[in-house]
Length: 119
Image 1 (spheres, rainbow, N blue to C red):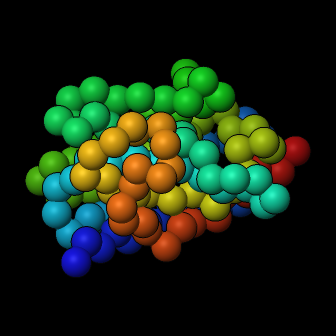
Image 2: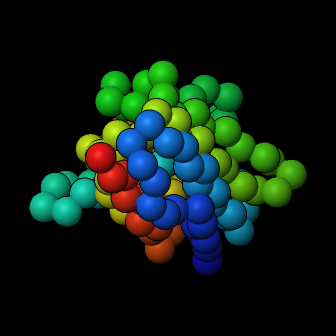
Image 3: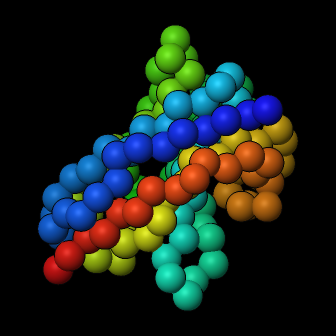
């Protein structure tokens, strides 16, 4: 059973920063996705299956950074220069295969953490 436990969400003003963490029960191909109200879940950032490469959605490129600590089986999402449109529930997820940017490729999901950016 794959377990993913997220932490680090909260309320921040526009231009501020937050760091999300996701502790996994093992080592997997991980991604960060988000879902704003009345919108579909969307890709934010992900690691390749090998864990070497990182990918970002255009909307967060240059502002968000995904990193990982393999010794702790933990991935992070550092979010800087936050905008109100970044407001969403953020999920970490693990996939066995498939396209990193497709939410349907992810097999396991964390519980989600709310990020709210005020203007």
